[in-house]
Amino acid sequence: MKILVIGNPHGHQKYKTSVLKKADLVFITGDIGKADLIRKQAFINIERKKKGLLEIKYTLKQRKRAFMQVYNSSIKLMKNLSRFAPVYTIYGNAESSNSETRKMSKKIGLEIDLEFFYVDGECVGIGAVNWGDRKKFPLIHDSELGN
Image (tube, rainbow, N blue to C red; front, top):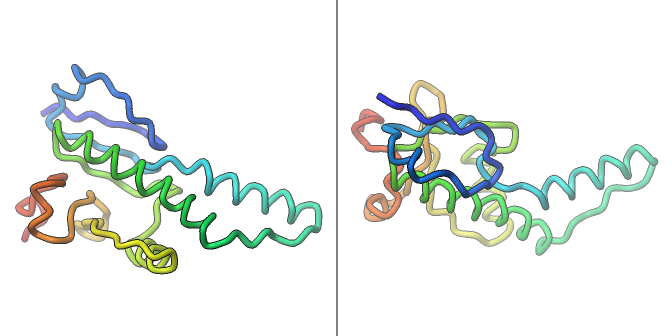
């Protein structure tokens, strides 16, 4: 079995097809999505706090834009990689839990149609919540989850 390990892609989308075609499984070590906007917002407030200034309260539109950058780049990457092999992930320092993601998506008015899958308490992949959507987004197979 050939396992392709991708470390912290941060939304990077370009991988050699010749390498992807050889993989039996893709493993991502977290930090899947591009988080430039969220990171910028956070670091601006860190610097403001150091200077004794109040934090900037970002608008719902600004927070949604930052969230969507991470979300869209993550989905794009996972869909692309899953065309070649099953994809497994672990949390990096930029991922959020299902409940955190749902809470934020609800705040910004976004319908999330994906779910993180766990085996023995560890996140092992992402796939479609609705059974009918799984063919469109076949990251891991139900048999691998014990369903």
